[in-house]
Structure formats: C-alpha cells, structure tokens
Length: 140
Image 1 (cartoon, rainbow, N blue to C red):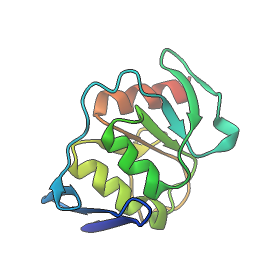
Image 2 (image 1 turned 90 degrees about the vertical axis):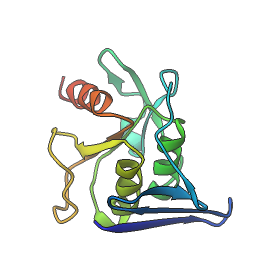
Image 3 (image 1 turned 180 degrees about the horizontal axis):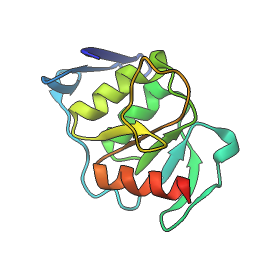
C-alpha cells in the first residue's frame, strides 16, 4: 500500500493518503480525533450488530461502506470498526488513511493487515490500545 483515495461525492470530500506523507481531506492534514470515549464501536456485518464486546460495549451498525466508515473513524465518530472480511479493494484506501492519520489496523486475530491475504476479519481503531482491547473482546 503506497497511496489511497476515497471520494465522497455527496460531501464533495476527497480523502488522500500516502505512506509516510500523511492523510488529507480536501488538502487539509488529518489526525485521529481525540476523546472518542463515548463513540460507539461499529461493524459492517449485520449479524454482529448487538454483539457485546466484553468490557467495552456493544457493536452498532456502521455507515454503509468502507469509503464512508474509515473517514468517520478518523473523525472520531467511532471507537473502532470491525469487519468480517479483508478484501483489499474495500480496505486498502481506508486502512492507509487510518494508519497515516495515526490509527491502527490489523486482523481480528491480532495479526498485521496484509492486503494480499483474502479472508478473515479486520479491526481498525484510533490507537493500538483500543485495537488490542477489541481483539481481546472478540476472542473472549
């Protein structure tokens, strides 16, 4: 993953991330939002909505697609995103956006996200501690 783009025409928002160069929205540099302790944990998998994450909270439905979800995570509208698949065409742009904004993404089993490995789930979070807590709760 070297570069990624997300275009949201309804908001006229262009998200661009480049490895080592940062993440941007319409040319303005992005950083993971602080103080998202009250934001919900989100999932795109409808069967997981309502699933309790031990010690953390309950999963709520995400916004619709990865191109909407990942920018919401960076903005602090979610404490973490949980996906049941890792198809690169869905996750490469957003995962790079999150990583370049200071967040963390990896598998639901605690491994590194590898876009060449199809299958398995992903967790994206504003920091490593939140990622580790979600992975631990999913395993419980």
